[in-house]
Length: 97
Image (cartoon, rainbow, N blue to C red):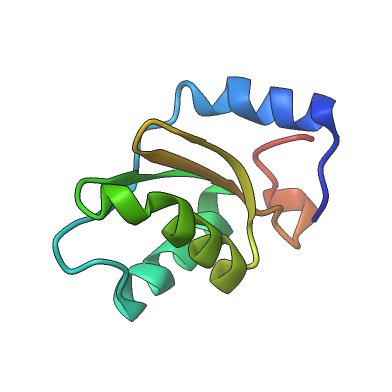
């Protein structure tokens, strides 16, 4: 999904109040974490992923996470990745873009 500049600004503003729901630790990016990220995106649309370890590889890992979950990378700020994936069900959408 390609987002306009205005849509990205709205998502960045909305993400300020979101707490990280996933943490990438010493085990790196596992299949279990990818499934959890997909689950969180399906229920919340806008989530944060915190890099506690693998900080040097966070750019590559962020791109991999976005590609494997079919989500849009809103921003990578510090050690926190913000992802967005619109719900396929209009009545379950929480974030309007």
